[in-house]
Length: 128
Image 1 (cartoon, rainbow, N blue to C red):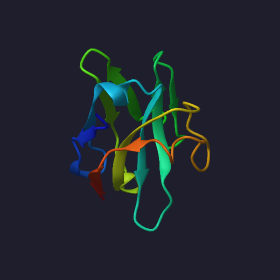
Image 2: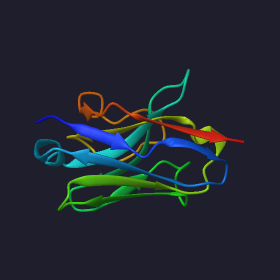
Image 3: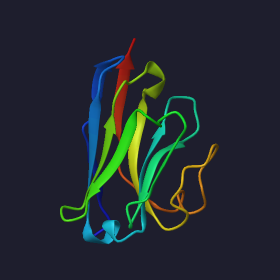
Image 4: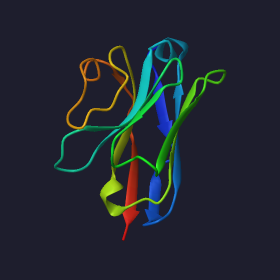
């Protein structure tokens, strides 16, 4: 019952768009906070966008104005629409469900994310 399955990653030219999807099991979707996190080679994991059960959203500064997180509660699918992609967005993107603060801090991860449920990840590569 613990399942998060990401899809939609790929390679794209700078300025292009991708939409990531995350299919969640019933149990996963019951977690109040759901979000997208990423990790680039040699870098720490960081939050990208988070949405709570009431639809409130939080974004990393780097994602504001370019990325949009949304959810289809009926289908239990989490989305991340990424526009105007930049080479710095290249990373493995993970869908995460957790209990805690449904927010993306300026640095690090909020309590609860590390102990939450992480999907296998989907690779996003942006070419300059």
